[in-house]
Length: 280
Ligand code: F3S
Image (cartoon, rainbow, N blue to C red; front, side, top):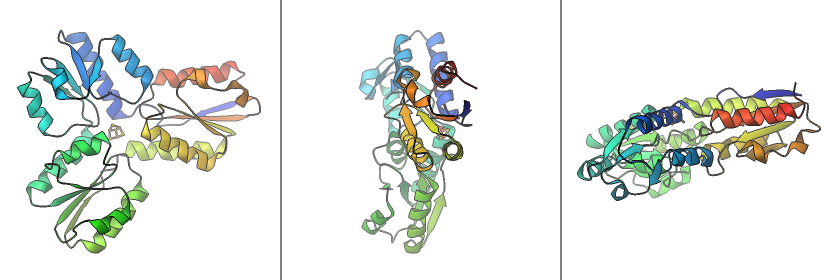
C-alpha cells in the first residue's frame, strides 16, 4: 500500500508560532496564563495546554492580573486597552498575516473609507478585524448581500485570511461594478490555498482519502469538502483511534491531509496505524 501525505498539511506558520509562544510562556512565567478563546480548534492540543495549566477565557475580566495569550486570529483593538486597565500582560500571537489585514482596516478607516470585510461575521478573526475600524465594517459572506449595503461611499475591501479565491472574486467583481472608489486588498493567506490545492491533487489519485482535524475546525471541514469532490471514499477523523481500519482492506493508495490546527504527532499516529496494517 502506498501512503501519500499532502504537502502543506498540519499546522500553518501562524498556529505554530502561537503554540511556540504559549509553551515558551509556560516555561518562563510565574503568573497564571490564559488564552483569549481556545488557542486552536483541536481538542487534543487544548487538553495538553490544560495539563500545562493554560486555560482559555472568553472575556478580559476573567484574566485580571494574569498573562493573556492572543491567538493567531487576533482581537479587536480596544481589548489591548482593557487588558492594560486589568493589569494583564499580553503575549501577542496574532498571525502577522492577520495583523496586516487589521492595519489596512485601521489605516483606510482613518482615511474616511468604509471598510468591507469578505468573510464570516461570526469568525473571531473577522470580529477582530472589525474592531480595528470601530466595528463599522460591512461584513459580506455572499455576493447578493451587496444589494443591502450603501455603495455610494468610498470603500476598502479586505478578506478574512481563510476564504476561497472564488468567494473573493465573486464579491469583489460585484462591488467594483457598484462602488466608484474601491480599494481592494486580497488578504487571503497562501497557506490556506496551498493546503487546499495539495489536498485536491492527492485526493484525485488515491482510493481512500483521510482528512485529519478537529470537527469544529472550519479549515478542516473545507478540506474534507474538497477531498470529497475528487475522491468519493473520503473520511474525516480527529485522531488515529477513529480510523476504521477495515476501510484500508481494498486500498492500494491512501492519501492523508490535515487541517491547520492538527499537530504532526496526530498525523504521524495515523501514518503508523496504516503502516502497521501492512504499509508500503
Ligand atoms: Fe496565519 Fe495563514 Fe495560518 S493567516 S494563522 S498562516 S492560515
